[in-house]
Length: 235
Image (cartoon, rainbow, N blue to C red):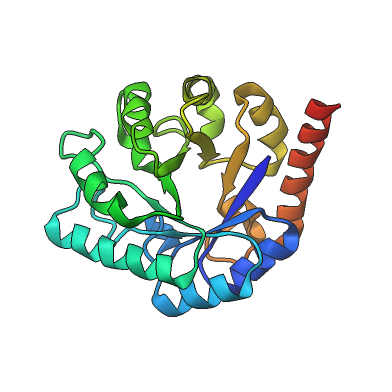
């Protein structure tokens, strides 16, 4: 049972680690859904944290459709993130018709050996998610999909997330559920979906506010629920 927490600065990351997070998703522009953070923040976070740091690779918030200039920028960012020692990257790319952009992935994933790769919530703009999962499973570099099961918050899409978890079994891809999760619904949500990894943003911040700092007490509460579920499963 893994708990991933969004961090937008080094203090966030340290507080999340202090609270018991298993992994950080490092972003800037949290109100825009997360953008690529700057090099100083990437280096310093990777250097200071003991837990894995996954870095957002998203050059702008206009859409998830990228032109050749965007893709070149993303390639440069990936090379820097890899060199920084980060554990992984978080990315996604769609065609204008709303399908997985395999040409973009072919280009971006060429030099990601040694990195974890999460396909982010661009996935939730795809109509046929089960078909998209099959497409993504053809990429051995991709080991995780961050999804709320569609455009609605994850707790409202529990049946779809359960289908994705079942379809992903044996593919090498794990389903990381995020968006709209909160500590009070976490246990019920996990039992309904079978997810083994969850992703939190505003719900683990002071006042539930994206622009406030991470609250280590809330992180600890979420992690305790996951640990309790795991204990129940292992007896």
